[in-house]
Image (cartoon, rainbow, N blue to C red; front, side, top):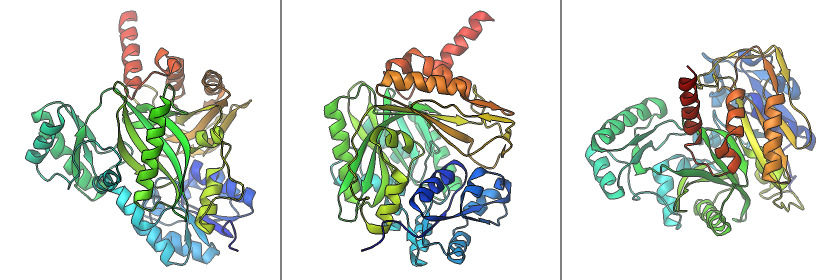
Length: 459
């Protein structure tokens, strides 16, 4: 019988997620190999791995994107599997293919699935054929402004212009009329070519009162799909998530069931294996929803699913990659409520990155509190990477309890030496909109506007 876990795992990532994966591997008795650029030499994940190898590269980012170098290191270090985490090479089909061709186990779905789901035009076509609702028509990417205008005529304004290869909120623009659409189309097409190496663009209906809800799945070798509830990720700045919670508040049970059924259909349409997330855009007014995208990796916000289901998703990833199925006795049951806060090194008003050294780092503790961090006191946040410092998660028997614990934990987290977004997270948690649970993706802008109005009155 095949072992449930690999013997030795190379973690092809850095910071918080590398530390998270190394922690689970250590508990399972799996040896770990970390890779790092010299700017990250003092980060805690390096010392927590069994073995660490320095990457070479013209820039720190290029070093972590050098798949061939990472595979060579894996082979030389005796690794038998590679976990990509999120970001960098996690959704790079060529890297997944190289790992498999090198005789190593890839902890994730196949390269072919990554390619399909990484192209938003193609993924929409595939899931629509499986009966999953999408916005707009299924078809090829739009080539001209005239085609975009014709599509908007069918959908009705406002519309969202999106880059097919985009992600993380990059490559998105809203247009309210024909002139705005033509400008947005050309700008997005040009930006997509520069940023993603593909200028494929499509248009979909823009929902002003939208909720961003996603379903966590595990795809098994026998073709079955396990679902682990939903997460509401509507609290965003610049289309990037700030706070997530599970389960989604005020979600009708019948609607939840339809979301789950659609996520299973989407995953089975491509023969999905391992952990993934199917994301939907939900109209908060009508209750209609459409497929947004599928992330073919573990998500930043996976801890709140772990807290509400009593599972370790990294453990299940390793088990599925090695044996094709979950661990023996795996029987998750949903309970309680969890909220995750993304603590970032950024200006709490304009959200611009603010790298720098960390002088003091005191994490919150207490019942239901979990902190996944990439830094400690004495380390430095460099300008080379995403500004995420840590994820503060709070679990409670009810949403009210989780909410109160999240707010207290945010206030108790002491970080000195650099600017963080903690003050704004506290504002959001204390707002009427978030407290009520009846918010949408416009909640951050509403809170910012209210703060501006108050500042004007007091000036």
